[in-house]
Length: 180
Image 1 (cartoon, rainbow, N blue to C red):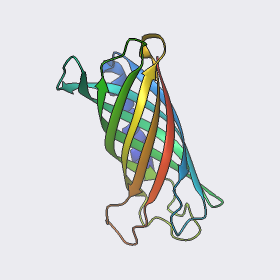
Image 2 (cartoon, one colour; image 1 turned 90 degrees about the vertical axis):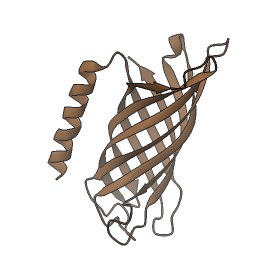
Image 3 (cartoon, rainbow, N blue to C red; image 1 turned 120 degrees about the horizontal axis):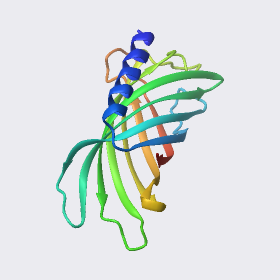
């Protein structure tokens, strides 16, 4: 199953890169919001993001656009490491850039995550290797041609009650992105 997901993600990346005008690399670090069943947990991720061709409500004040993020990460819970692969479609509302070049935005996304192991925590592991990931965040684009961004995200991971127990995990994530 894990090998299939890796092949699927690589295929998606190849098709998306072929049609992408601009893409962004992202690096993230997150701190778990301590659930009762985990002593501590952190995440580290690298992702590739591209804008999708769909946007709505384009006005002088801003626009709603779509994007897709594909990536891999490492969770550290208690004393165990767990790898993850993920794909997340996103919606982002970007306000028009201010005179000083800053462009503020909010975003939301729901995607799928596949983990290399379910026992990322000693007490209360995930019951499935597949987890849904929901995120909500706010950020700012800056730099030359607004080619960099900094985003603060809240992320929740859960299997959507596919199987019990469904402990889930929550993170506060800081993400830095830069366009190539």
